[in-house]
Image 1 (cartoon, rainbow, N blue to C red):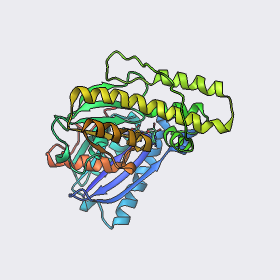
Image 2: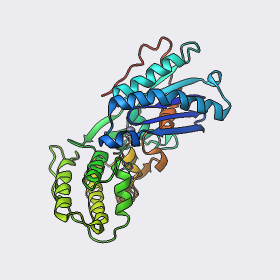
Image 3: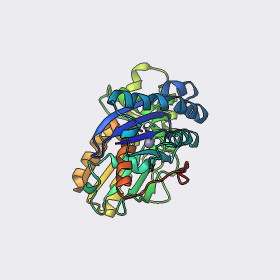
Length: 330
Ligand code: KG4
Ligand code: ZN
């Protein structure tokens, strides 16, 4: 079995998978309510809370599956990108956990893990496929021909798509994380939305930019005033603006690169309207679409476990005293 930990942001997540990739245990403790009063993730608070929750979750994993340390083949964890304090909490914990057993530790790249769960197995990734990660930290398009290496093809030049949802939600007085809140409110609205910004300029044609959308949205919200009946319209406007910008840039990239397949992961990929827009774009372009299952779009340890399993099979892991295992926040 592989035990996997994910602590790169504000979810403490633990998973146990067997060597075929079957999930035996998966549980996450969200820190949302802890950070909500601050309007965003407070790194110090996040790392302390990961350190508190990890031993509890690992104990639950062993207790509920009737397994223990002696049943493990290896352990995997996210080493970055992410908040260094959170990464360090898991690294210190795992190095301690493995001190006597000397289990191999598998370092996992967070972004690769987000893309890994878009497909059932890596053999499904055809040569020339592209990968899009849209989350609170990323709006990045990659070439996947050298998987698991990622070739960066395009990225946001300012905020990430998830941040744009979060800032839009904040403007509407909705709690963090804003994406699910915006989606819920937007689903109550049927009708025309306001086309916030028509021509978004970026230095490179497939890059994305969300800061102009945010500014336009904040000023629309202040023009509309506090009428509660307008909130679903405003949420739908925010959601549509973000999705159509991603789809516009993605469409240009797909026309340019002509990939056989597109993999999509990250928290924003849980959005139903976005998933539909991706289906119709890829349908039109004849591109096979693989989107992560909804429960595995946001940060979770299952993606770390499955990516870890793949890395382990390729023989790349760290042995005691695990000197290579260090945080890679950037
Ligand atoms: O992948 P993730 O859990 O963490 C990072 O690696 O950043 O992504 C979190 C982001 C947040 O910005 C959140 O608002 C957004 O994903 N998100 C959504 C939805 N669910 C989460 N955005 C739009 N619609 C959703 N349903
Ligand atoms: Zn993530």
